[in-house]
Image (tube, rainbow, N blue to C red):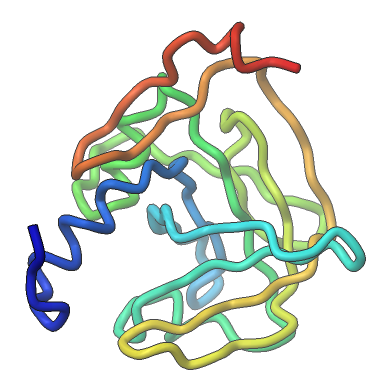
Length: 165
């Protein structure tokens, strides 16, 4: 079935057919730790080690983070759906405790893995900005299944053992 490409609801629905992992991006906002849920994340390069995060122009992240700044990217496990909701705008008391990396960058110590990155470039992209960042540090914290997002809902990875090489 074909739909007009300029229909935002159709575009969002079709993009929802692409399963993604869930991350929480963490940074300092006015000297205090802040975070936002993001699934628009990807690795870009091995040499140098670069990643990309897409954020809405109107976000607190874009208002706080510029070229040369550091931020954290935390990969959530299937047991951390509550953290995704918390940092996605449905705040819950007692959630979202952060640790501080030696660089002064906040991160979620209970995530599956986290990266500490420094912004190398910011590119405008419609109503978003693309943050290309160089990896400064990384850590794997747990051996667990990732939290997935598909079709507007959270999901779980089926047959994790079959996916291992």
